[in-house]
Image 1 (cartoon, helix red, strand yellow):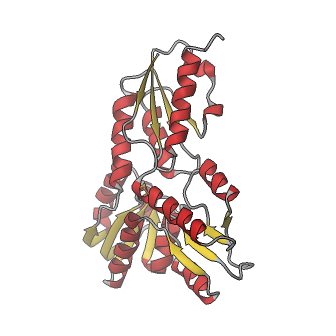
Image 2 (spheres, rainbow, N blue to C red):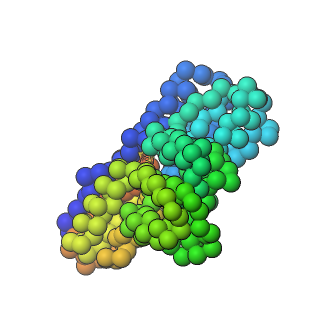
Image 3 (cartoon, rainbow, N blue to C red):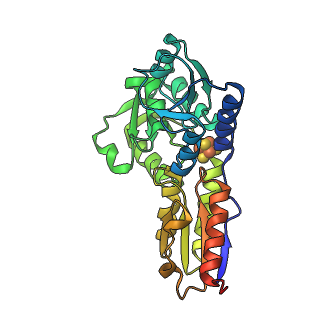
Length: 283
Ligand code: SF4
């Protein structure tokens, strides 16, 4: 059995940076409580490891009196940051610079009087963070059908969730043309996720089975899964123990891709498990 492993695996730049800042905070502040508001990154195994070394995930500041608050890689609504400042928590901003750029562009558009359309998933923390900064000037659109209820505006600005699919972003932009007189579009897609999507498309065309490794709460991993599933039998797993030998039976080649918050160690473990299943040791 041949394994085709994607070139772009392991943490992306934004996730590496967020993990680095968190580990540095732990090293430099022994004994101090360290919190992240929501998971730092979207990978349950990595979050469990952080918890084991003292980083707690919280969803409210209500009972937090002191300590360090880390803003996750996908950002945070300004109202929560204001609350944290009032409580005099020490804040470390691990927002990915690409997400920060989207937040700033949305704020700029809103300030210039544009109705801001954000293409993405309204429940995703990145989108909640952006909307939190522009309030009523923002509207989240998941797909073109959601535009039906949108009234016409003189000025419309458009950005997208960093992990959105390029094709959905394009089709929403095309449909928005009818909704406004002046249209300003910023391409805020993350180049790192686009590269992984391209690789997934290419590999999925040439193998019998695809394995997508990454958290089920990770938007970019779900995107990879959708891309692969449209082309070949595909399974998404978070760790090698979810891998079933039955999936690999009779397969000549399998492809492996992973989300941007999947550690390289998890990818290597899956490769080892696949090799073992293909040629089990007889000792
Ligand atoms: S996927 Fe892109 S936007 Fe998201 S954390 Fe990584 S580099 Fe930043």
